[in-house]
Every structure is written in C-alpha cells, then in structure tokens.
Image (tube, rainbow, N blue to C red):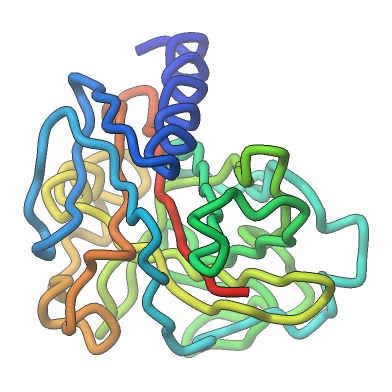
Length: 242
C-alpha cells in the first residue's frame, strides 16, 4: 500500500467511524478489529459503540505533566517528533451518549503512548530518561462530525501491559473521560515481527490478561486497515456522557 493509498484508506475509515456513530454499518474488506472478545478479529466491520459510554480507565502511567491542554503548540495532528515506527493514522469519533449519540463537537482529545521500545516521553523510567521530551503526545479538537485525528506510530509495549494508547477527552477544559485504546492481537503480532519492533519481540501480555483490559475491550478496541509495509489506519468511536 502506497502512502497515498494509506491516506485514502484513512479518509474512508474516518468516514465509516462517523457513519457508525449514527447507527449505520459500513464495511471495509480489509478491516480488522473486535467489539466483543479481546484479540478476536472480524472482517468488514467498523467498531462503533453506538451510545454506549466508553469504559473509564486509569490515567496512568505517564500522563502529561507540562500542561499541554493549555498550550496551543501541542494541538497538533502529527505527534511523532521523528520517532521511528510503523505509521498509524488514528481517527476517533467522540459521541455524546446523553444526547442521542450526537457527535461531540469542539472537544479536546489528548493521546499519549509509548514508542517502539516501550518508552514514554516526559518521565524517567528504568533504563531510559524521557525527561524534557514530548514525543507521542498531543491534542486535537473534534470537528463538526465529532472526529479527532492523529498521525502517530503503532505503539510498542512494556512489561505487564497489553499494547495500548491512552486517551483523555475534555469539554470546556473539564475532563469528561479517561480511557485507553486496545489493539487486535493478530495485527500486533504481525507488526512486532517487523522493522524497529522486531528486536524487542512479542508482547507477552494479552488483552485478556492485562490489568486494564481484562474486563473486556468492547468499548475500547480499534478497527485497523492497512499492512505492515505502509502502515495502518485505526478507527474507533468513543462514547461519553456530558
């Protein structure tokens, strides 16, 4: 898949996520995801949670300490800051379960994740010091369709946690949801055999054995389209109640 085709797929997937939030069921022949069982896969399904509120999860580890929410410089689509890894285009549709699943417009959506080696920016960690760095963190404002998009890399992993991306959603500066995005294990296993991920190897923690996702990933599992050569697009609908 060329870079152009990857971006085209991203546009299609993002549109599908918006349609899913409205209750329709578009399909994509190469979509992989799960709305029920951790690690299972479905074909041609867009992961739309309808009016279900996304599961709330811990804000840790390694939430932002710099006040990015109040700094326009970090409202950015591209959060990579030159970090190596398989390209991942992430489109999140935020819907309001308290208003008939209407798109939540103008919300601030923050993400943070580890790099391919399992390290986070901003913090000193065993064997690595990310202090003063801000890679793989940022915010976007949801558009008229409730969509926030990011250009990032496929997240790596660290001991004891399944592969994930952290998400916090703000309305008028107030946090209304902290959750995490899970990834299909079949895709993750393929990614971790390639490129900068291969030396670290496979993640031994499954979604089912993870202390965050062990109660299920029905509202947190992304749907992926793409391949391990050019990268993936990931779509997910996250419900909040405001």
